[in-house]
Length: 119
Length: 119
Figure 1 (tube, helix red, strand yellow):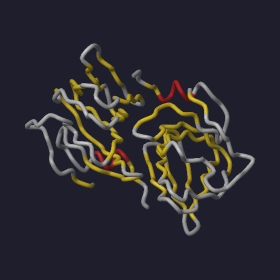
Figure 2 (figure 1 turned 90 degrees about the vertical axis):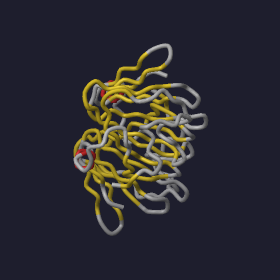
Figure 3 (figure 1 turned 135 degrees about the horizontal axis):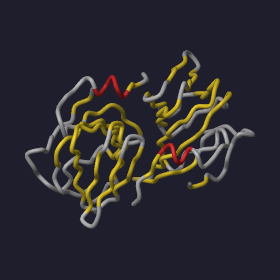
């Protein structure tokens, strides 16, 4: 049971759209991700997804509107809702979601990472 | 599905050791709490607990050592582990834990809040 410093962890990787696992609790993972550019439209049929922005801005596009998040802001995308994360410049995100969640959800994409790494 | 700004939410309450619910996902709550002084020793027999410090410092005392957390740092206290949060000055914390978790765990204290409020 060690403490985790978010900024130190973000220095350990540079890949975009490649969540790294930094914690596990109650069947959920805490993940950190760097985002820049456009991710893919996807949804998670059975899992809600929490995005907390550590370095923004970061936008969660929905089919009917956009949620623009800056540092210190979060949103929860409920299961079944299509969404597409985008960031013009490099953004840093903390994600909580069940261990079973795939980051591209029901979509198979070049961006899909099958096995996430612990850092 | 609205975004939540942590600092704005922290302005909405002043009670210490009284977690406020700000989000719900996958059977878990996201809670914000203000801490100053000493909480009670307690444990959660069935739930791991995540503490992310938004404004520190904030210490999680364990029986054999202390985990000192500053802004941007988190720790996860595994189920069954006795812990006692303390903060010399007012600290702001984001907590992520199952909806069933009572903040004083297996201990009934003057600090126990039976029904948490959504803000």
